[in-house]
Figure 1 (spheres, rainbow, N blue to C red):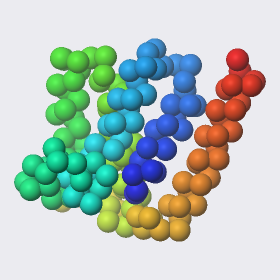
Figure 2 (figure 1 turned 90 degrees about the vertical axis):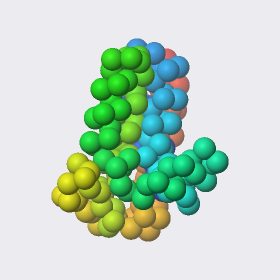
Figure 3 (figure 1 turned 60 degrees about the vertical axis):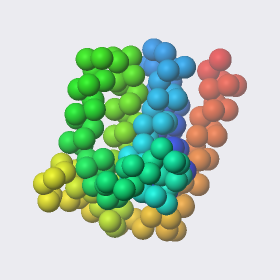
Amino acid sequence: MLFKTHLLVPFFFILLFFDEIANPWIFIPIALFASILPDIDNPYSKIGKKKISRIFNFFMKHRGIIHSFSFLFVIGISLFFYFREIFYPFVFGYSTHLILDCFTIDGLRIFYPFKFKIKGFLRTGGIFENLFFIFLFLVCIFLIFYRIFVVL
């Protein structure tokens, strides 16, 4: 999936469940950042092009350990015990990235280093991803206007 799709999907769910979020000023930026973080190991991604990402690009291959629920589990445990306030938004955002990547043709080894892989039917940047993005974008616009003019 593309950068824009990885950001839009968690944003959509944030809009859906906005009233349930205890502290949106923390939840939203952490969730959105975590939703693009797994691509730090890809030198061609928006986050992977940053200088700080070069160490990940050098030592790790794309869709390796960082693209797994095994890695998320380890990071999640650390966050739960030391930074509990960002635990839920981080796990939420990171999970949406991993789940979306399971729908791509390249698939995902969800419990790296085990070989089990989930593959989907979507080509990254293909017509179906773009149609999905446009549809979800329009739904998000509707939800924003609904929240502004009807709920408030």
